[in-house]
Figure (cartoon, chains in turn orange, cyan):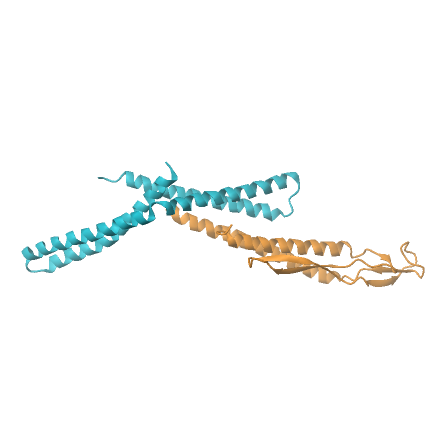
Length: 131
Length: 143
C-alpha cells in the first residue's frame, strides 16, 4: 500500500528483529548442547539483515552459521564423550547473546512504536476533514 | 448516486471556486475605486462596464475547466481508492484466517494489515462523506 509506507517499512523492521530474537533464542537454547568431540558442535545462528530490494525497509538476507569447532571439555563420565573422554560444547557467549536479545527486543519495540505513531499521524490527518 | 455524478459535482465545485476566486477581488476593487472617486456619475458607468467585462472573463474561465476535466478525475480517484481498500481488506482477511488456523508467521503482520485496512476504510469514508457533503451543499443552493 503506497499511502501507508511508514507502516509497511516499520513492519519489515519488526519482521527482521523477530527473526533476530528467534536466532538468539536458538543459540541460548543450545548453549549447553554437548556432542562428542569427534563431531561438529552446535553452530551459532547469526541473522544477516540487508536493505530491502525495493528500497523500502529491511529484510533478512540469510542466516550465517558460526564456528563448529566449539569448546572441547574433558568429561569422561558423559555418555557422549569420545574414546579419550572429551565432549564439545558450542562456542556461544551468554552475555553476548543476552545483549543481542536486548537489542533485538528494543529494536522490535521501536519499530512497533513507529507503526503506532504513523497510525496516529494518519488518523490526525483524517480528523482534519471532520471539522 | 453514481460515482460519475459525484465526480461531476466535484468538478462543478472546482469551477465555482475558480469563478469566485476570479470574480470577488476585482469587484471589491471596483467598489473601492467607486468610493474614492469624486465624480460618482461617470465612475458608476465605468464600473458597470468593467464588471460586465469581468463577468464575461470569469464566465469563459469557468466554462473551460468543465470541458477539460469532464468529471473523470474525482471519479477515478474514488474508484481507485475503493479498489485499494478492497485489496487491503482481502490481505487482512487472509492473515486473519491464517491466525485462526495457526499458520500465521508473524503476529505483527496481521496487526499491521488490520490497521492499514482500518485506516484505508476511514480514508475512503472521509472522502465519500466530503463528496456527499459537497453534493448536498450544491442541492441546497438558492437559484
